[in-house]
Image 1: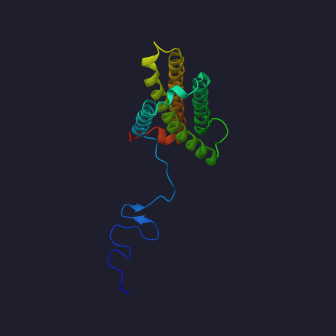
Image 2: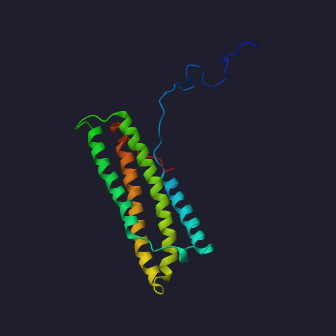
Image 3: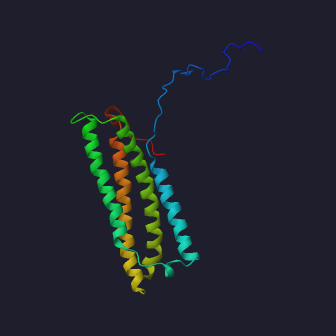
Length: 185
């Protein structure tokens, strides 16, 4: 067995059992990073491209039933609910109203992150449908109706992304909101 070196048994710059690194003590609490806008755009673009490839190559559009407009509207209502929830949580976190339990805030952050990513996925799918149906809207009656439904769905999916990002922003501690804007990636 060898004796520990001048930097302790874990080597230079490593954290020892106490969790102290070269910068000093580390905060043991887990942190959640803000959702990156580039990540959401990347998800949106990849899903839109893949969805468009599936519709074009596999010729699934002709076998699909008509697209209900209510599908997009429901997603929009979820986005509006998150916008409203963000305002309520923000007011309560700022001190007016009853305190927010930490678990409620953590769940709201998870909902917000999942909603923004889910909205990007749904928006990408609506974009794929819209890219296929819009050029055919003048020739095919079903494509015209589906283009309207896909356009409404796309707008509502973007509303869900915005609602999720707003809710996530509102769940930050009041002193964190005053700092610089969140990182882009």
